[in-house]
Structure formats: structure tokens, C-alpha cells
Length: 465
Ligand code: 6PG
Image 1 (cartoon, rainbow, N blue to C red):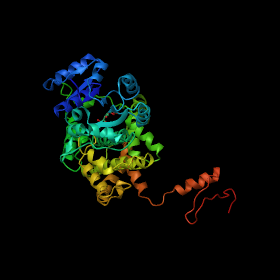
Image 2: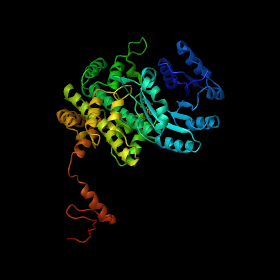
Image 3: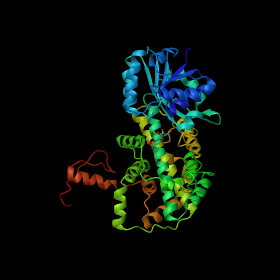
Image 4: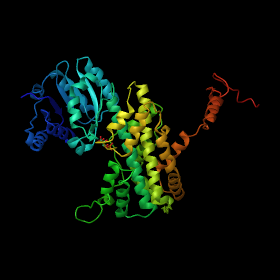
């Protein structure tokens, strides 16, 4: 039997994606070194008579040429070793689609390396976790467009749908698919951090119990803040630890881990000199959380604070909405800059459109982002859209009240505070940065530009005027 597509790596994501494809009627198969994974695939896919391989040659030979192979293996060196294993077995024109969270620079390198052998390689970000993979993820494929067209019908069929539109679109050339997925994850980190800070405010600032916090999130999720992350967060607050009756959340260590995509987003933003402070704070605060012993010791040394604040829920909701919008705005801004820098020719409205469903950052607000970029594909920053401006203006008071109350009481809210000050700076026509230029020129003759004349200037600062 010959199959149309082969999946390499039958872990959670690969297996569920394959089951999704089989559901949609495609003839597909999978390969994994681990027998248990194949057994799992065959068990879960028995209705479709799904078969897997543990022999790579037999697997490759079972796929119609030009072959379409999807990789779902852990990002990093494993991707290279799998490619090395595959290469001698492949023929010109075959397509390899890396669907893991690979770093986009690795994808660039792999495209170049495989091109020499006449193989198409493209990177595709997939979001949505296990459920998404099984029943409809959001997918961000980038690279060789011809290769994409070969598999387009499969992706369209398996993607999540919003108003019947599939949450997948051709992103752009090169590693743009992986780049966009990385930024998606940066936004994901930011929103998770903001929600965690809201939890801190509700618990330590307003004295709410978990049950009350559940109600707040549940209610918010019925309105303008509706989002996947808020929805699952609400559920966490009523989840019990087995039959102990104790909330599991209270027993989880307050040390956050990460696999790196958020950090990469921050690194790239520095590289591109495009500030995304809310995302940066989210990355840094996961790292800070790991210094548990130090935090405990310093709390002892400085004394536990009374962090009670006087803020109402509506104000807090405004602060969250404002900051969530800012987090998306920063991510989109980074995409605008990357598109110019790397010639990705990104269609921002298309990206917002495919993020409306299936992915981890799906939210009602993505419809607003989609509309803003659809109206004006050259929009430099989301804050520049008239509709968004109205929302920002209406949430600003609540945001200022919330942030200042937390700061006054000593309640740590790095992402909220940084987001507000980002807004206040990016809406400042004349910043105090003229002074930095003067300082640089003073000690290092680095020159400066003037507002009243063209050219570069240097002053003899030591000479008293
Ligand atoms: C998604 C997620 C996913 C990511 C996890 C873990 O879109 O489905 O972004 O790809 O791997 O969220 O990320 P961290 O371990 O870095 O939190």
C-alpha cells in the first residue's frame, strides 16, 4: 500500500495530527523507533486501520513520490539527526516539513543544506497542544510555496475553523513559519504572566479565595476577554488534588519552567531592536521564580509586606484588557519589523486571522486585531488603529489605578507595570533621549543630530559656555 504522507515521531503531537488527517480521509502513515508509540497509534486509529512503521526504509518506501514527510520530534539536534538518517533514503523533490518548535535560524540552515540535494524543507509552527492536534490546530507553514501547495489540501482539512475559514495560511518564504510561531509563543508567555499577576492581585491584594478567583475568571471569559488561556485558567482554580478536597494549584511549586521559545522571542527582539517589554518581563519572571530559596530568604530579611490594595474588579479587568492588547501589539510590532528585516512579506491580517482559532493565544480580541490589519495592512502599530485607540483610552484609568495601587503596597507586578510604562513612553512625542545623545557625545565624541539642522554634530562639552 502506498500512502500520501508520512509522519516521523508518533509522540502526542505527531500521533494526534495523524489521527486528525485519517479522520479527514487522507491515507497516511507514521514512523517511530519506539514500538509502544506505534502500538498506541494503531490502537487509537483502529477505526481507520492506521498502520505505523518501526523500520525507516520500509516506511519511506511506502510513501508515494514526491514524498511528503512531516517531522514531529523535539526541536534541536534531534531534528538534524533525523534528517541525516532520512537523507540517503530520499529522492529529489521530496518534501520535509518540520512541525516542531525549531529555532528559525536552524530552519534557515536546514533549508539551505537540503536544497543542495534537491529536497524541499519547510518549517511549520503548530499550536494548540494535544486537543488542537487531534481536532484542529492553528498552523503556520513557511518556506517553498510550491512544496506548500502539494500539501495545502491536507492542512486546510485538518486545521481549526473559524467561520468556516481554516486556521492555516501560507506565511511566507524561508523560516517565516517558525518565526511567526515563535512570536505566537512570546505572546503566549506574556498573557500567561499577566493572568498569573492577576491571580497574585486577587489573592494577595484583594484576599480572594480560589473559588472566588474561579468566578472572576469565568465571568471575564464570557465577555470581551474571552480566550482559551482564561478559560483553562478558570478551570484550574476548582481542580482538586485527587480526592483530598484540596486545590491542586496550592500544592504546585511556584517555580515556572520553559522550553525556550519565549526567550528566543526576546533575544530576536533585541537583535531587531524592536522592544517587546511585556514579553521580556514574562520571560524574566519565569526565571526569577526559580530563585525560590533566595526569595524566601529575602522575604525574611526585608519582612513580609501587607499587600492589601483598594482596587475594584472592573478596574482590574480594564488593566488586564489593556495589558493583553499591549502584549499582542508588541508581538505584531515585532512581526512588522521582522518582515522588513528578513523580507518575509508577512500578511499581518492573515496571521491574526489564523490565530483566531486552534492556537493557545486564540481570543475574542484577535478578531479586532484581524479587522485592524485588514483595514490597513501597513499599520505600523496596533495602537495606531482608531478602534483600538478607543479601547485603550477607556481602559487606561483602571489600569493606572491598579498598577499604582500595587506599586504603593509592594505587590510585584512586573508585566503590568512595564506594559503601562511602555504605553506611556511610546505615546510620548519627545522623550528625554536627547540627553543620552549629549552624554554619549560628551564622554566619547559619538556625535548627535539636531532638531534644527541636518547633519551630525559634536560639541566641545568641556568648554564652559
Ligand atoms: C502551542 C504551545 C506549545 C509550547 C508549549 C510549551 O502553541 O501549542 O506554544 O508549542 O511548546 O506552550 O512552552 P514552554 O515550555 O516554553 O512554556
